[in-house]
Length: 239
Image 1 (cartoon, helix red, strand yellow):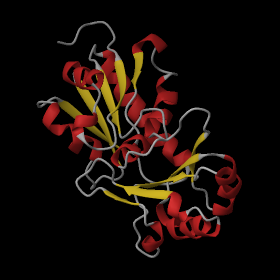
Image 2 (tube, rainbow, N blue to C red):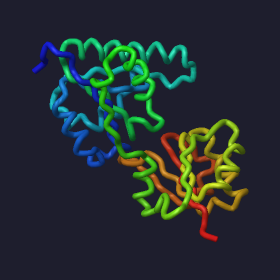
Image 3 (cartoon, rainbow, N blue to C red):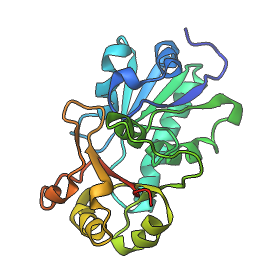
Image 4 (cartoon, rainbow, N blue to C red):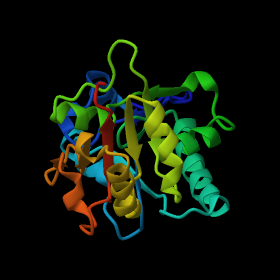
């Protein structure tokens, strides 16, 4: 039951999509909190995070907040602040609040921006971040691919508009995880083919969901439009 004291806030990474990949701590906190905030990309869209945990939250109060897929940080700041203020209202009423995010809470996550706003409103000791399994950890597990061993170097990088920026990274690191592939998939594949790394790469999309797709034959994906919610793991062959 809510108390007169300020509630606690939990930013929970819920993993890539499979409910069985939630940590025991994430599951326990979900059961104990009073209010669950979930992000979604648009007013008319469904929240993927909510779909994942829906069977686990047993009719709790759920508040959906829109975080549109736009690049304008000034406009996005308004959405982050709105969510932070709504969370603070619940905390001030003595309720414990959870905010759900796909994957890990602090790895390419909307939660990071929300956290910045909350730190200006809520005491640090009231904010708790719960890590989650990343999409690239889950993807590597699907194909039993070691990401790093012994003194191997691992890089996790988002794909920029200029894919040539990836060339020196791919040359330097033993394993490279390419995030946010999206519409640049064809250009990334072309670069990997040019560097002789296409056959050493694994493509994975919608990891942890029913429509998960994994392949090591990435050249056949050109023109497929499969870049959404996708990653590529490039494992440089041993010399």
